[in-house]
Every structure is written in structure tokens, then in C-alpha cells.
Amino acid sequence: MLNLSHNIIADAGAAALAEAIQTNSTLTKLNLSWNRICSAGAAALVEAIQINSTLTVLNLSHNIIADAGAAALVKLSKGNQLNDQPNLIGVISWLL
Image (cartoon, rainbow, N blue to C red; front, side, top):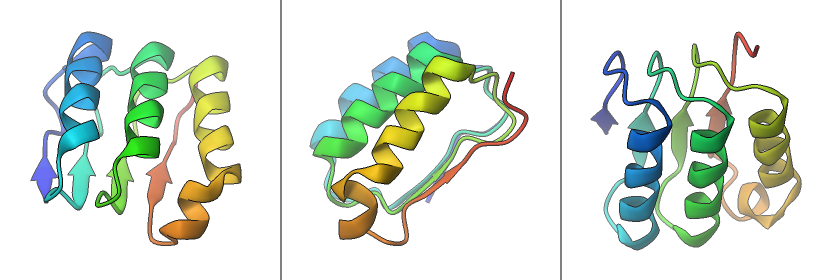
């Protein structure tokens, strides 16, 4: 479990984490709540999750993800990723 909540990493930090997530084979849980992540950061994370096979829990609660980012997360939930890993949680609350 990597808890990076309350760090204000924003989209740039989310994009950097997304690059690392793509090739990481040990991280199973990631908490990115309260980080001012917007749609671009959420979209980058979605792309990374589609490649990563070990991440099972992702907490994106209390960020400022707008419609485009929410749409990317919904697309992920409709794809095979959630079917392959039923424990993957995309916690999205307080969407703006």
C-alpha cells in the first residue's frame, strides 16, 4: 500500500506516477485522495492501469476530476480491466 494522499501532486504528479505504474509489478494499492488531480491526471492513470496487472485498489476520492476524467474512469470500468481484476476500486467522489 502506497499512501500519497494530501500531497497536492496534481496532474503532473499523477502523470509521473502513471509512467511508473505501467511497469511496476509489486504495487497493489495506491491512495491518491486529496491531491488536486484533475481530468488529465485521471486519464493518465487510466492508461497506466490498463497496462498494469498488479494494482487492485486505486483511491481517487476528493480530487477535482471533471467530466472528461470521469468518462475515462467509466470507460475503464466498462472494459476488461475490472472484469480481470474485480477488486480494482476507482473511488471517485466530489466530482466537479
